[in-house]
Image (cartoon, rainbow, N blue to C red; front, side, top):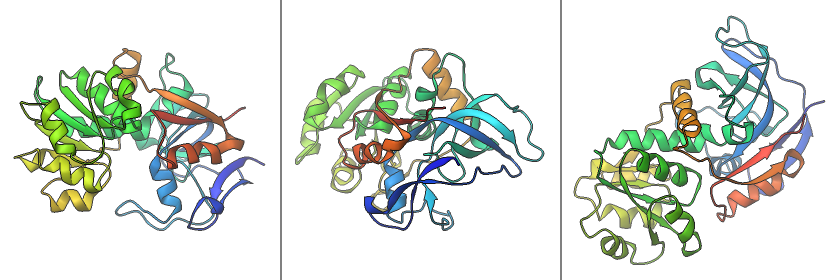
Length: 306
């Protein structure tokens, strides 16, 4: 039977297990995909602890972990058009992606370009798509400066590159250990920690025009003091604090069209997925711990052998 990595109840890592499950069957508007790679994101372990996106219903347990995959279409649901068996695709699964098989809704599934590997494609639907949505939501003109907190993580790495591709200057907040990495992306690095606002002002004496927050909490509080126009404050980490400060969340498009765009950026050489670690499915626990511990640079991906 196909294998999947699940959590059996809400809680910590002790709730996780590699299990065998029946192969799922696609419903209307869905395709069944033989997974080749699955991206690992902070939202994965947060969902295990009970987090749910606004408007999302309760998940049936045990629940498969993971929110982005790349693979090969094996079966079409009723009335599905635009896809055929054998197509190489990537997107957001209906109910988990750390598995040998996953169901994908066609609305958020894109055809994978031949020049894009399964591993890199699996790193795009959450981090790169969130980054793309956020940078375009800010609507800054070329030459403007954006402050990105958490610039060394999956979304931050993509957001920095997309911003630079649009002609924006970037000040990237990350740990001292990620300084060279952030500067390699074309950003001015500012170390995280106390007195953040003062260090940003020193690094960007002309000020910043927008904040793309990926950390939340005290970091978001400090970053907000740098803006006169709080409508240019968005977060992918702490919508409650952002709302209190006059900002808002990243408005996600969640469309195949956005996936097509980020894939094109990769193929054109303007966006590197920066997959810095890969794990087989039977080591999914290690992959998730790498992200949950907060020390990962770039993206972590689970590769599924066929």
